[in-house]
Length: 182
Image 1: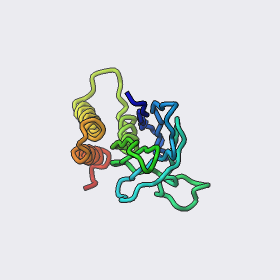
Image 2: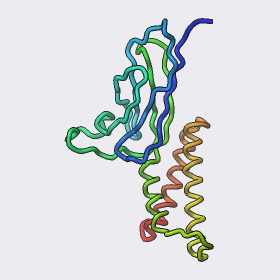
Image 3: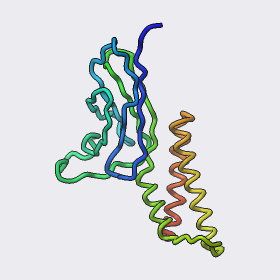
Image 4: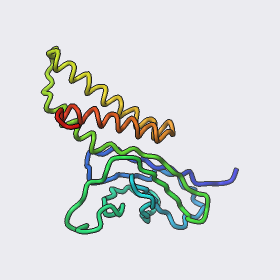
């Protein structure tokens, strides 16, 4: 059997809304060359991917500047990286077929809102009142929809279905956190 690289990435779910964390989990064959490893990341709402030069075994915390979302004050401030569907391609030679591509649903900002709401619920180790119980059940449903959205995008390979579930969960959370919002 011919020797070959087994390319693999891990996109970590982080709580910092200013970074996208990606780690190289590939297995490289010693007798095969790695010419020009690079990440191509298409941000939600963008058509052209950001190009990031990398080295074997990278472990990166990517900022909005690296993704070309933020173009000013990159040395002094960091912008938030948006939630949504990211297309992440890792290739080790631009002119070969040695690449791997992933769909990643980033939910960092929405999860921050979710956890902020959980903190405000002041949940205690006793049976809640009926109003609080309804709210807890609603929060449980929202978390399930977010988990389902990530699953649809990252495991089921149905990104549009995942984005729809994400948007549904987001609308449900916004309704809870801001009842007067439309």
